[in-house]
Image (cartoon, rainbow, N blue to C red):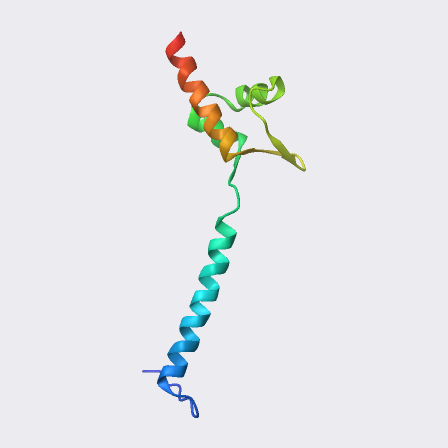
Length: 95
C-alpha cells in the first residue's frame, strides 16, 4: 500500500528548495558539532599503545601526558593522544 501526501498551494520547485534548505541547515549543524576536538579515554589510549590502563594513569600522574578530568573520568585530547602514541613507538625501539 502506497502512502500519498498531497500539498496544495506550493509548487514543486518551492518544495524542493525548502527541502534542500533544511538539509543544508542540518548538515551545517552536524559539521559544526564534529569540529570539536576529540577526547579519548584512558582505556582507548592503553589499547592503542598496547599497555595497561594503570600504565597510562601513571604517565598522567608523572606528567608525560596531559589529561583533563570530567567528574571521575579522565580524558586525553587528540593532540596529547598522538604525542603519547609517538612516544610509545619510540620507546619500543630504544630497548
